[in-house]
Length: 231
Image (tube, rainbow, N blue to C red; front, side):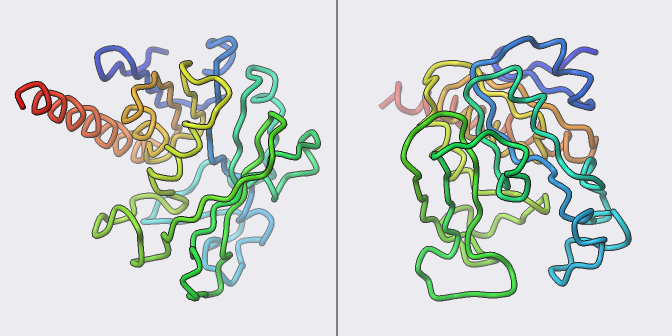
């Protein structure tokens, strides 16, 4: 199982089941990921949000979210890394060690707008620090960043959010691993911050999207660097 190597060797991307890849990696410096945590499973495919469509199936643009048909077990990730950030962890907090370091993304950002979805999303972090809030309006078409750029994944998050999280990791210079890469947002953020990145995505469609997004981020970074040198 060979990864696709991008960005002058600083990015390794696997189109595979992370359960097959993780044992080959050994310990890593940091994990930042938004895993499938059984939303469709928990709602029996009939939640009002429309995320679940059909029993135990999550749909977006006709593609199932692999792994969302059952409850999520975070223990394999905790065994290979000390610095772990897990989004959506409030849905499986009973399977995690107690931690005071909860991270909250306020995606309404005091806009006053609300709908049937949650006003915020939460992440669990493995190290002991005070809870933090990131206020960044990113709600449907109303966004503080990436305006006019279509979403390509049902649980896609803003690059700005992932950059904020990576910048505050205890391991400031290590490699970032995202075993549930999706459309590659964490990889884009890592590349923009000059970090090495390993991404794993089981769905070929999303893997191809991640490759394009991460490659484009690196090309843009290189282009900006050349302009800066010429100035």
